Every structure is written in structure tokens, then in C-alpha cells.
Image 1 (cartoon, rainbow, N blue to C red):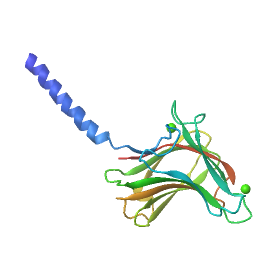
Image 2: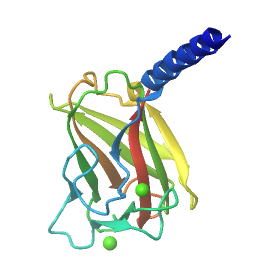
Image 3: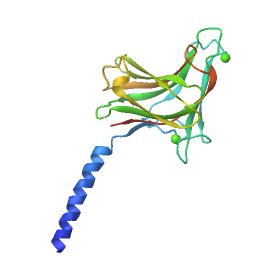
Image 4: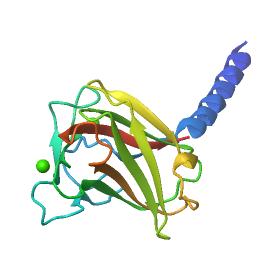
Length: 188
Ligand SMILES: [Ca+2]
Ligand SMILES: [Ca+2]
């Protein structure tokens, strides 16, 4: 009787190990919970402007503890302004340090905010760029799952260089506003 119990326990142990290997596929780009750089991959991050000399357009990145996904930590608050007399786009970038997506099929992130549509990009170290438009953003946190194959233009996913958020004057439903992003990760 005692041997039987031991056997079951060992089998259970193997099942747990197997399950851990299958599901341990979430690799974070950032959850922002340290409230500072670098991101979870050790990469730098920051903002960019299409026309830095045009002061009517800009994007500002702020670690925000008041609005975050989850009970603690921070999100990334992006205050954007693409309301300009000139063509305008700007946004936020986070370095991926050559991350290899093998074993992952999706990019996941949580978002809420003012504009209903904005663009995200993944870039690789071969100079390729894949783009995807996130739509249906609301004032409530929403989980967005993007199959990696939907990043059109990105054929090699074995050495990624950068994750980018882009606000564009031609597509933003509000030309000046705020987006919060949190829990950005690759999943299986
Ligand atoms: Ca967070
Ligand atoms: Ca403006």
C-alpha cells in the first residue's frame, strides 16, 4: 500500500515538471513595475519624435503607479500629441536585445487610453520591421494578443531589436491624449 502511494506521487511529480516546461513560455518585455529602466530584457527605452524641432508634436513617457494593470507597481503612461500643422507621428520604443522568439507565437500587452487606434511595431537586427494596428482601445484595461505572424514585413523572428508604439496624426481618433500600456510579453 505504501509503495502504491509513492508511485502516484512520483508520477504526479513528473506531470508537474512537464506542465511547467510547457507553460513557462511567457517572457516579459516589460511590466514597468520597477518604475525605471531597463526593461525586463535589460534593454533601454525612450520616446521619439518625427520632427523634434516641431514643438507642437511630442510624446512623453511616464512610469505611472496610479493607473496600472494589476494591484501593484507601475504602468507606462504615454502622453502623445500629434496635433500639428505639419505631418506628425511619435511614440515609444523599448530595446529587445536580440530576443529570439522561438517557442513563442504571440505578443501580448494590456492597454487603455484615449485614442481607439495606434500602431505597434517589432523590428529585427536585419533591419526588417513588422507593423500591427491595435484597435478598439477604451478607457478600461484590455488584453491584446497579436500572433507574431501578423507583424507583416517581419520574416525573421530569431533576433529582435526593438518594440515600438507609434501614434500617427492621420489615424489617431484623438490627436492629443494618453495611452497606458502594461504587461508586454511574448507567450506560446
Ligand atoms: Ca505593471
Ligand atoms: Ca500639438
